[in-house]
Image (cartoon, rainbow, N blue to C red; front, side, top):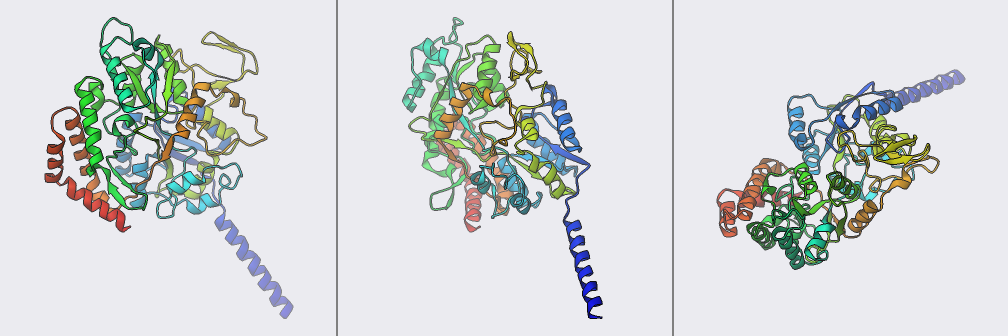
Length: 496
């Protein structure tokens, strides 16, 4: 009887372990729905080829929702309100923290800790992921560091006005004045501006990245000091200096007057059309994008990427957008394993997210592209389907920012094609940047920050455009409730 009982118990334990293992087995999804912005190549840029290759590699049906890039967050919110949540969505930093605080995102902490990517030996982004954790938990994944913006100046314009690249604010303003009052583009008329940007305040964290020369030590939103105490930089004296610098430059015609309403694409197009000469934009591959698009428009493509001015000190390395799994995803473990954890596989999938689809975005086949002849086996980018006369440079993952290397045994034919302009730009930025701080969302922030941000943006625009003095703006900030909202938010952050 004892032997029989022992056998029965052993069988019971075996069945129990088998059942537990079966319960923990991750089910492969049949379909995954993702919502993405323009940081992934669009339908006009061969997205169907990317989708087909992804489905070939995984055997899963990939459903893509991709609004226009500039209207992405509006469409995302509409999607959430309609209860038609995607399984996975790209989220800017501000939305990431608020969505997580509202319980809208799946907690991927344990999945990440046990993931193949994190434990591959190729992953180099622990510091980045530590910065993404909210109360010690991870709700989003990024395949790259955040990157940020640095200032590019047209070399031909510097030569035309007889100046070197600036290193101080006084030199910077002198350059903008020369660009606005002389004829740097050679069309016979002084009809250009020194600088333009997508808004006087950026639409997302870290807010000052498009006009760092004017903001300097000022910051228009919430951040914390070295001792960990949160504060609102908008109410500090440094903000007055920033606004008055911009107001003075705006009054003199140095800043493009459409800056208030510009989107990033508007700025790029004006830069290519030779409307202005100094453009603060993304480091790395964008150095090549700007150059090639200038040349495609018949302009001189040589750009000078400058370190931050002495008064600026360091550019901001932003909190990266993240790929998050929605709390309503029916199979989050499966989506994590087969979507998130394959991004940086060091092989074919990482190749797809980095460079796009073979023979659509890059190729090793013999071809003549933009008058350049390539032999069979020569790696090269393909001509842009949307912008004839230019080449692709990447898909979603900037190879210079990736948080994991390719596997040693994987042959990446594009590895030698990193262009010197992109490398130089990335090196300047990486050596002269500081990590931005992610701001957690509190209940009080959820109540007041929307109205507070609207009020701040309104007052900033009115001061810069000469419609209101700084003193009057701060009086309105007080009377309209901004000062009270700001204090309550700061108190809630410091109480966390």
